[in-house]
Length: 130
Image: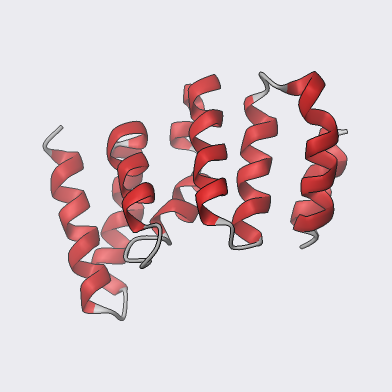
């Protein structure tokens, strides 16, 4: 069940969660929650591109996920990541928008790396201008 998969992710067992999610996919293909939990599990395994794609699908199926704090925090954590920054930034800019601003402001003020602070500040300006 989806509850069992959720428990596996929360217990730090993303590999088993992904296996369970794959079994559920044929009957839950249009479930935003299924895609959200795929995203969480993929992020836990550091499969960020797959996680971003899963989060994008969760948002497409249920726009309320645009305001989901854990989803936003996962994406904001990738600001400045050398491989997936642009994918995460695109989703933050174009799909999530203003709900990401508090997390981005926190990164822009407190992140130890100058580059990440600058990129977060740039995203804040771009999102605020929309």
